[in-house]
Image (cartoon, rainbow, N blue to C red; front, side, top):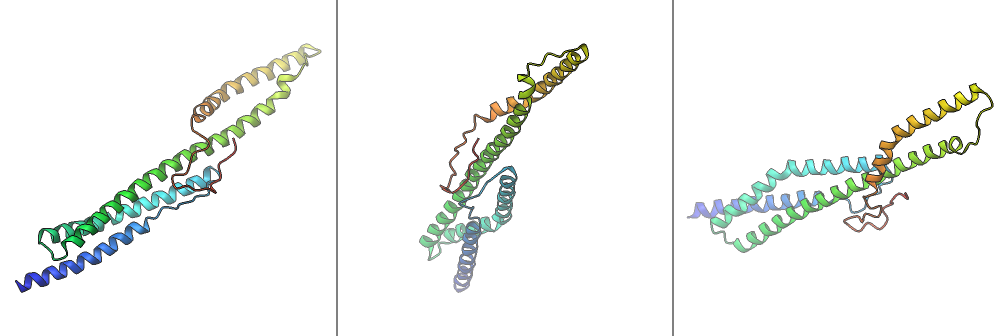
Length: 197
């Protein structure tokens, strides 16, 4: 009986050590509450960082699982601290779920911000192209010779080909406009900059 008590005490000590480590792992996974996503490349940097957090969490999951299994084992062995162990197991499980949910929500927000910035980038390029085409479209020039008329026809044909090529980009912009430009950050980040589109 004495050896079981010693083994139980050692298990209890190991459990406490792992519980402390497990909670530290989950606190390491604190997701940035406020991100400055200014453009596509800054959002991509944030997405890479966020994926790195997920990799770190996944690498530490075996340690958390071992901690939970030890806690359950101590409960089955009727540990003197069963109430505290049960409470800590609940706390650890809840914290794991919270971090996972928080990661998922933040990832979804980053994906939406990427789409918003891609839209802004495409909209600026489309606007610049349309602006560059205005002089051709507003021209009243008809040409004073056959050569000038043929040159105007070639310019017009070149414009039609370019417009056809741009049609896919315009369609893409129409699809992207279904994404709200005022996407709230899941963690109430009041200073996040949204592009003006």
